[in-house]
Length: 167
Length: 196
Image (cartoon, rainbow over all chains, first blue to last red; front, side, top):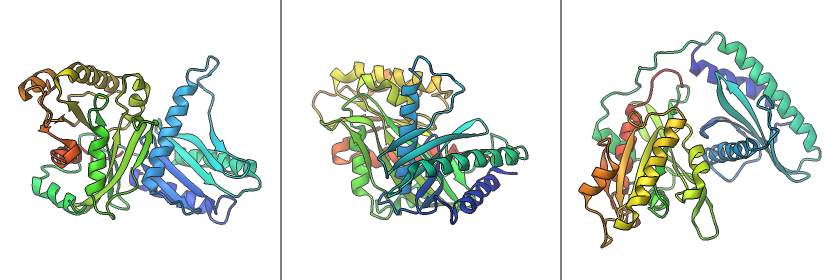
């Protein structure tokens, strides 16, 4: 299975899990360590671009994770969660791994009577997703690293993509 | 590490503006933000201190046009330049596809430039990158000031890899897009077509 199929699988799996469930009305994101969004379901209707959400999710996790690494009793095998919340509104981030790379599953919720319950649902989702993807990864194949997507891009092509921005 | 979404035919790349404090990194992406039409840019995210020094990072998502059937999206980040934010700089370099080193051309900032560049090399190495293989573009900023080092000296002390280099006055926008376009070209040509 190729990476493109894997991404589609993840999107399909998350869509199916979230549809009609307890997390359906909230915003759920999956992003990579560098903040690139791989999945988005914006039930809340955030007033910010999804790319910005990814950058902030990735940034806040990495900052917290680095801070936590200074704790004297930090056991390496322990899995952290990141929560920033009031009694009804908040952000909850969980990490998971695919092919030894870190990814973050982020939930933004508001106006929720029982945040503990939806956090539990997100943890359940994270475990199921990780298991599902790990099964799929066993079938995955790698292409050669040396294959470049583009070769010999011209200056005119670069000018053309920037022209789109009005520059 | 760039991300190619074959399903949506979209490429995401991460470019980091690196350099000494007050060198003009944030000014670069603010200029890009100002000059980019509304549809192509997302919100600029700035995590600042009270006196507007970058605390964690600035972030600007930029949707460019299509190249050979792929939509291109660049994620522009700046690092905090002040010396004591080394940990933040390391974090922001994770997954980077290309670095624009914004050097302050003023004579008295040469040591700060060198220290920052050494830090960049070390931080990249610690994360498994080889600076010689990563797209890197040098920008000699603040060329309008009276006390600038000659280009030859900047090149000799800071550009030992013979990377593309541009003179700039980021406040006025001079050199900003030239730098970014060259970086974009190098980053796009460096994308692996296989798995990401």
